[in-house]
Length: 257
Image (cartoon, rainbow, N blue to C red; front, side):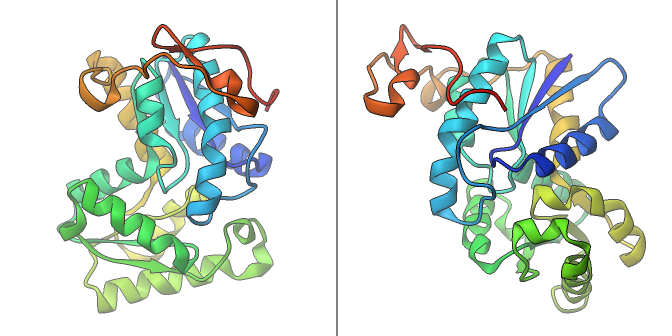
């Protein structure tokens, strides 16, 4: 089984961290292919970054489809470009945000989300409503730390995240915590032990759910909104994304990872 895990931003160190988290939970016999786009923002913090991250990410999904990927994982907690990816790919596509929310809902009556910056909160609140899990989420909290600062031990990011978890337990009565950033993937086990409650990493949740869908032989329905995109040309720098016969044309977009 080949699971393609795509980091929608262009940070190589983030991709390496995501790759490690995915491999740590993958079953024997599951191959993980971790990629990132060659074009786009180095981190995704809000709607503007998200818009420019999607084309390069879709190019990686298209390439992985051609290599026979059995499933794709979008490793950004905003579930960047998830609907477009499901329309493009034949294999199932799992967003780490949606996966983490569902896993948390299976082990706790109420869960809280701890993310990076406050500007991410509206995106996550919107997704929770869309996924039907808003009433299960006690609160979405921000630790007040930029995404890239998570890689700097001197930033105090871990302690800020830990403080928000403690507040979620005390003030929101949260019974589980969802870590709202792929860059937090390596923190889940330690924070769970420290605070005495389940702490869910979306990368691990999404990889295990993707494996389950593959084993069940379930793919994304191509009826309705996830039907293949209709044929049409795209102009300018988006020409490689043109659609012919219900399939996206061309080879690599933006070069290698």
